[in-house]
Image 1 (spheres, rainbow, N blue to C red):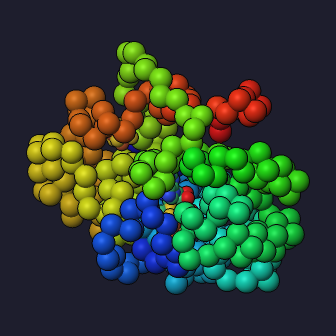
Image 2: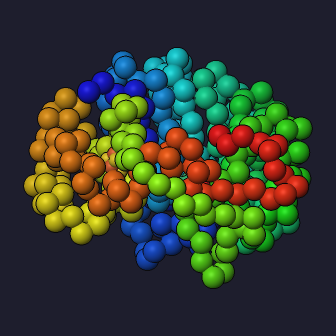
Image 3: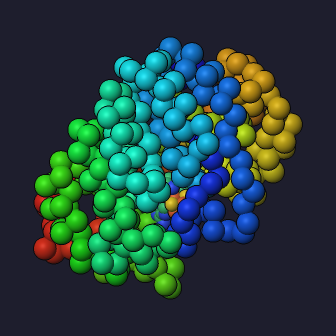
Length: 309
Ligand SMILES: C[S@@+](CC[C@H](N)C(=O)[O-])C[C@H]1O[C@@H](n2cnc3c(N)ncnc32)[C@H](O)[C@@H]1O
Ligand code: SF4
Ligand code: SF4
């Protein structure tokens, strides 16, 4: 398989405590991706897109962040690079200088800003003013940015205002649903769950030639399998045994991608994803191709204004 897209986790460090983040589940040890992995990735000549996000930390706090950006400038001028961040660390001056560098790369920074007055309810540990000043520093350098807004019941009323600000600043605006809702973090009021028949499983990894590489170098077809670095097998004992057996064979530090794709684990998963619990739960065709088919969020005063990203 040729690889066109890599989803990469680079650190478990974070300065915030977002209540529904995976890292909120217990103490997390500090792990940073060995830089060697980035160097190996930079040699993949089929790559079209690299997403630096991860599920346990914030990429900007990676100790080799500056070195990583220099590597991207050197090797990745032609591919799309997306970096997800809460954007609250460092100073506006730092973000301006970083933006000047990053604008030479194709891609954008995805800032997580879930509200204005209500911002700190989810992004615990910072303020809207802090992230906004940093975003202003960054975009004044001319670099591209996206405003990601997770919708809850309490911040739903701020969506239009946030979108207007984003438009004025030239940012792409991307409202998304939370991956889960709780008693404290409730669904937006205009949320509907529609029943959809005949769901098919869409394996994004196979269809879009994408893989996920985690902070310890372990490669999996996607991040659903290791959102917390611990393998999620959803009571699929066969899959779990394959994983345990192959853990060394699917580490990018010690193996080529070719060998990883030839591992029993990858072969098994690609042949059996339609019968695999975690795949059934995570990758229904409609959920990927048209998220609004299953989860729809459409307040009356917002209807039809926006197509989903
Ligand atoms: C673990 S974060 C890592 C990147 C960065 N720390 C951040 O928060 O943007 C991975 C992604 O999950 C998003 N995220 C956090 N909580 C979420 C939630 N409840 N529902 C959906 N996405 C969420 C983040 O905004 C980010 O885009
Ligand atoms: S900023 Fe990102 S990594 Fe940090 S706690 Fe929030 S969602 Fe998790
Ligand atoms: S969860 Fe399964 S079906 Fe979905 S992308 Fe990953 S391997 Fe493919």
